Image 1 (cartoon, one colour):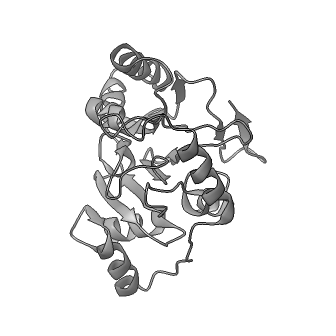
Image 2: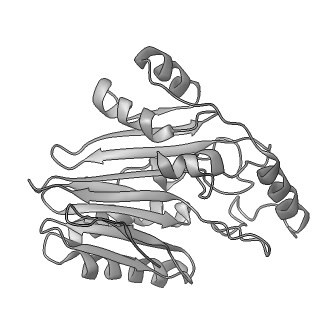
Length: 256
Protein backbone atom coordinates (compact mmCIF):
# COMPACT_ATOMS: atom_id res chain seq x y z
CA UNK A 1 0.00 0.00 0.00
CA UNK A 2 2.92 2.39 0.61
CA UNK A 3 3.97 2.13 -3.02
CA UNK A 4 0.38 2.68 -4.15
CA UNK A 5 0.18 5.76 -1.92
CA UNK A 6 3.54 7.22 -2.95
CA UNK A 7 2.45 8.54 -6.34
CA UNK A 8 5.87 7.60 -7.71
CA UNK A 9 4.88 4.33 -9.34
CA UNK A 10 2.26 3.32 -11.90
CA UNK A 11 -0.09 2.12 -9.17
CA UNK A 12 -2.61 3.75 -6.84
CA UNK A 13 -2.13 7.52 -6.77
CA UNK A 14 0.46 7.34 -9.55
CA UNK A 15 -1.67 5.26 -11.93
CA UNK A 16 -1.65 6.11 -15.61
CA UNK A 17 -4.75 7.12 -17.58
CA UNK A 18 -6.84 5.37 -20.18
CA UNK A 19 -7.56 6.87 -23.61
CA UNK A 20 -10.67 8.34 -21.94
CA UNK A 21 -8.57 10.07 -19.22
CA UNK A 22 -9.78 7.66 -16.54
CA UNK A 23 -7.92 5.61 -13.94
CA UNK A 24 -8.45 1.84 -14.19
CA UNK A 25 -6.19 -0.34 -12.05
CA UNK A 26 -5.52 -4.04 -11.49
CA UNK A 27 -4.12 -5.80 -8.43
CA UNK A 28 -3.69 -9.35 -7.15
CA UNK A 29 -2.37 -11.38 -4.25
CA UNK A 30 -1.62 -15.10 -3.88
CA UNK A 31 -0.90 -17.36 -0.89
CA UNK A 32 1.43 -20.26 -1.61
CA UNK A 33 0.11 -22.41 1.24
CA UNK A 34 -3.06 -23.38 -0.60
CA UNK A 35 -2.62 -21.39 -3.86
CA UNK A 36 -5.57 -19.21 -2.87
CA UNK A 37 -5.69 -15.91 -4.75
CA UNK A 38 -7.63 -12.69 -5.11
CA UNK A 39 -7.67 -10.45 -8.17
CA UNK A 40 -9.37 -7.16 -8.96
CA UNK A 41 -9.56 -5.41 -12.31
CA UNK A 42 -10.81 -2.11 -13.72
CA UNK A 43 -10.61 -0.59 -10.24
CA UNK A 44 -11.77 3.03 -10.39
CA UNK A 45 -11.21 5.79 -7.85
CA UNK A 46 -9.76 3.56 -5.12
CA UNK A 47 -6.27 4.33 -3.82
CA UNK A 48 -5.34 0.81 -2.63
CA UNK A 49 -6.60 -1.93 -4.98
CA UNK A 50 -4.30 -4.48 -3.30
CA UNK A 51 -6.44 -4.25 -0.13
CA UNK A 52 -9.48 -5.32 -2.09
CA UNK A 53 -7.60 -8.11 -3.84
CA UNK A 54 -6.89 -9.52 -0.39
CA UNK A 55 -10.56 -9.22 0.52
CA UNK A 56 -11.45 -11.26 -2.56
CA UNK A 57 -8.98 -13.95 -1.50
CA UNK A 58 -9.89 -14.10 2.18
CA UNK A 59 -13.59 -13.24 2.32
CA UNK A 60 -15.23 -14.48 -0.89
CA UNK A 61 -15.61 -17.73 -2.79
CA UNK A 62 -14.32 -16.05 -5.93
CA UNK A 63 -10.90 -15.34 -7.41
CA UNK A 64 -11.52 -12.29 -9.60
CA UNK A 65 -13.88 -9.33 -9.27
CA UNK A 66 -13.84 -6.39 -11.68
CA UNK A 67 -15.33 -2.97 -12.38
CA UNK A 68 -18.35 -1.92 -10.28
CA UNK A 69 -18.20 -5.19 -8.37
CA UNK A 70 -15.00 -3.99 -6.71
CA UNK A 71 -16.71 -0.93 -5.25
CA UNK A 72 -19.58 -3.09 -3.97
CA UNK A 73 -17.05 -5.42 -2.35
CA UNK A 74 -15.41 -2.48 -0.58
CA UNK A 75 -18.73 -1.48 0.94
CA UNK A 76 -19.71 -5.03 1.92
CA UNK A 77 -16.36 -5.72 3.56
CA UNK A 78 -16.12 -2.30 5.23
CA UNK A 79 -12.60 -1.98 3.89
CA UNK A 80 -11.08 1.41 4.63
CA UNK A 81 -10.03 2.84 1.30
CA UNK A 82 -8.95 6.23 0.07
CA UNK A 83 -10.31 7.85 -3.06
CA UNK A 84 -8.26 9.09 -6.01
CA UNK A 85 -8.86 10.87 -9.29
CA UNK A 86 -6.60 12.05 -12.13
CA UNK A 87 -4.30 14.84 -10.92
CA UNK A 88 -2.81 17.63 -12.99
CA UNK A 89 0.53 15.85 -13.35
CA UNK A 90 -1.06 12.74 -14.82
CA UNK A 91 -3.27 14.84 -17.09
CA UNK A 92 -0.22 16.76 -18.36
CA UNK A 93 1.52 13.49 -19.11
CA UNK A 94 -1.59 12.18 -20.83
CA UNK A 95 -1.70 15.15 -23.20
CA UNK A 96 2.05 14.96 -23.81
CA UNK A 97 1.93 11.29 -24.77
CA UNK A 98 -1.17 11.74 -26.90
CA UNK A 99 0.32 14.76 -28.68
CA UNK A 100 3.48 12.86 -29.58
CA UNK A 101 1.80 9.71 -30.79
CA UNK A 102 2.03 9.06 -34.51
CA UNK A 103 -0.66 6.42 -34.26
CA UNK A 104 -3.03 5.85 -31.38
CA UNK A 105 -2.92 2.02 -31.40
CA UNK A 106 -1.48 -0.77 -33.44
CA UNK A 107 -3.71 -3.72 -32.66
CA UNK A 108 -4.44 -1.92 -29.36
CA UNK A 109 -0.80 -2.34 -28.38
CA UNK A 110 1.10 0.57 -29.89
CA UNK A 111 2.66 2.10 -26.78
CA UNK A 112 5.52 0.53 -24.90
CA UNK A 113 4.71 -0.42 -21.32
CA UNK A 114 7.04 2.19 -19.86
CA UNK A 115 5.58 5.12 -21.86
CA UNK A 116 8.60 7.24 -20.96
CA UNK A 117 8.69 10.97 -21.49
CA UNK A 118 11.87 13.01 -21.68
CA UNK A 119 11.31 15.13 -18.59
CA UNK A 120 10.17 12.69 -15.92
CA UNK A 121 11.27 9.27 -14.89
CA UNK A 122 8.21 7.02 -14.90
CA UNK A 123 8.29 3.82 -12.89
CA UNK A 124 5.89 0.99 -13.60
CA UNK A 125 3.96 -1.80 -11.94
CA UNK A 126 4.83 -2.55 -8.31
CA UNK A 127 4.99 -6.05 -6.87
CA UNK A 128 6.50 -8.18 -4.15
CA UNK A 129 7.39 -11.77 -3.35
CA UNK A 130 7.94 -13.03 0.18
CA UNK A 131 8.78 -16.12 2.22
CA UNK A 132 8.41 -16.61 5.98
CA UNK A 133 10.35 -18.78 8.44
CA UNK A 134 7.90 -21.63 7.88
CA UNK A 135 8.64 -21.65 4.15
CA UNK A 136 5.31 -20.15 3.12
CA UNK A 137 5.55 -17.98 0.02
CA UNK A 138 3.34 -15.20 -1.32
CA UNK A 139 3.15 -12.80 -4.22
CA UNK A 140 1.36 -9.48 -4.67
CA UNK A 141 1.14 -6.94 -7.48
CA UNK A 142 -0.59 -3.63 -8.24
CA UNK A 143 -0.65 -1.55 -11.42
CA UNK A 144 -2.28 1.27 -13.32
CA UNK A 145 -1.86 -0.62 -16.58
CA UNK A 146 -0.79 1.15 -19.78
CA UNK A 147 -0.91 4.77 -20.72
CA UNK A 148 -3.80 5.50 -23.11
CA UNK A 149 -5.07 1.93 -22.94
CA UNK A 150 -8.59 1.14 -24.04
CA UNK A 151 -11.20 1.30 -21.31
CA UNK A 152 -11.83 -2.21 -19.99
CA UNK A 153 -8.34 -3.52 -20.72
CA UNK A 154 -7.06 -5.84 -17.99
CA UNK A 155 -3.39 -6.79 -17.92
CA UNK A 156 -1.19 -9.52 -16.52
CA UNK A 157 -1.31 -8.14 -12.97
CA UNK A 158 -4.82 -9.54 -12.60
CA UNK A 159 -4.08 -12.87 -14.29
CA UNK A 160 -2.90 -15.83 -12.20
CA UNK A 161 0.21 -17.36 -13.72
CA UNK A 162 0.80 -14.32 -15.91
CA UNK A 163 1.88 -11.41 -13.72
CA UNK A 164 2.10 -13.32 -10.44
CA UNK A 165 2.09 -16.80 -8.90
CA UNK A 166 2.87 -18.46 -5.57
CA UNK A 167 3.03 -22.10 -4.51
CA UNK A 168 4.90 -23.53 -1.53
CA UNK A 169 5.87 -26.50 -3.71
CA UNK A 170 7.98 -24.27 -5.96
CA UNK A 171 8.20 -20.59 -4.99
CA UNK A 172 6.71 -17.21 -5.80
CA UNK A 173 7.09 -14.85 -8.75
CA UNK A 174 5.93 -11.39 -9.78
CA UNK A 175 6.38 -9.70 -13.15
CA UNK A 176 6.36 -6.23 -14.67
CA UNK A 177 6.42 -5.24 -18.30
CA UNK A 178 4.25 -5.60 -21.36
CA UNK A 179 1.20 -7.34 -19.92
CA UNK A 180 -0.03 -8.73 -23.21
CA UNK A 181 3.27 -10.53 -23.71
CA UNK A 182 3.56 -11.74 -20.12
CA UNK A 183 0.03 -13.17 -20.16
CA UNK A 184 0.59 -15.05 -23.39
CA UNK A 185 3.67 -16.74 -21.94
CA UNK A 186 2.13 -17.43 -18.48
CA UNK A 187 5.53 -16.16 -17.39
CA UNK A 188 5.21 -16.31 -13.59
CA UNK A 189 3.78 -19.83 -13.64
CA UNK A 190 6.65 -20.81 -15.92
CA UNK A 191 9.15 -19.32 -13.46
CA UNK A 192 7.59 -21.20 -10.55
CA UNK A 193 7.62 -24.45 -12.51
CA UNK A 194 11.32 -23.86 -13.14
CA UNK A 195 11.91 -23.42 -9.40
CA UNK A 196 10.80 -26.99 -8.72
CA UNK A 197 14.27 -28.04 -9.87
CA UNK A 198 16.29 -24.78 -10.13
CA UNK A 199 17.09 -21.85 -7.86
CA UNK A 200 15.28 -18.51 -8.06
CA UNK A 201 17.95 -16.67 -10.02
CA UNK A 202 18.30 -19.31 -12.72
CA UNK A 203 14.52 -19.56 -13.00
CA UNK A 204 14.23 -15.78 -13.37
CA UNK A 205 16.89 -15.71 -16.06
CA UNK A 206 15.25 -18.53 -18.00
CA UNK A 207 11.88 -16.80 -17.86
CA UNK A 208 13.24 -13.53 -19.21
CA UNK A 209 15.20 -15.42 -21.86
CA UNK A 210 11.93 -16.90 -23.10
CA UNK A 211 10.28 -13.47 -23.06
CA UNK A 212 13.15 -11.88 -24.97
CA UNK A 213 13.33 -14.67 -27.55
CA UNK A 214 9.61 -14.45 -28.26
CA UNK A 215 9.02 -10.69 -28.09
CA UNK A 216 12.40 -8.93 -28.00
CA UNK A 217 14.15 -6.66 -25.50
CA UNK A 218 12.58 -3.96 -23.33
CA UNK A 219 9.55 -6.14 -22.67
CA UNK A 220 9.72 -6.99 -18.98
CA UNK A 221 11.26 -8.15 -15.73
CA UNK A 222 10.59 -10.62 -12.94
CA UNK A 223 11.36 -11.17 -9.26
CA UNK A 224 11.25 -14.60 -7.62
CA UNK A 225 11.85 -16.44 -4.36
CA UNK A 226 12.34 -20.19 -4.16
CA UNK A 227 11.56 -22.71 -1.41
CA UNK A 228 14.97 -22.21 0.20
CA UNK A 229 14.50 -18.46 0.51
CA UNK A 230 16.82 -17.51 -2.35
CA UNK A 231 15.72 -14.47 -4.35
CA UNK A 232 16.09 -13.96 -8.07
CA UNK A 233 15.85 -10.89 -10.31
CA UNK A 234 16.02 -10.69 -14.10
CA UNK A 235 14.94 -8.16 -16.73
CA UNK A 236 15.62 -7.22 -20.34
CA UNK A 237 14.98 -3.49 -19.85
CA UNK A 238 17.58 -0.78 -19.22
CA UNK A 239 16.95 -0.94 -15.49
CA UNK A 240 14.46 -2.25 -12.91
CA UNK A 241 14.52 -0.93 -9.32
CA UNK A 242 14.41 -3.73 -6.73
CA UNK A 243 14.48 -3.66 -2.94
CA UNK A 244 14.89 -6.48 -0.42
CA UNK A 245 14.65 -6.88 3.33
CA UNK A 246 15.00 -9.77 5.77
CA UNK A 247 14.30 -10.14 9.49
CA UNK A 248 18.01 -9.43 10.10
CA UNK A 249 18.08 -6.20 8.09
CA UNK A 250 17.72 -2.82 9.76
CA UNK A 251 17.19 -1.05 6.46
CA UNK A 252 15.73 -1.92 3.09
CA UNK A 253 18.40 -2.80 0.51
CA UNK A 254 17.79 -1.15 -2.85
CA UNK A 255 19.34 -2.06 -6.19
CA UNK A 256 18.55 -1.67 -9.87
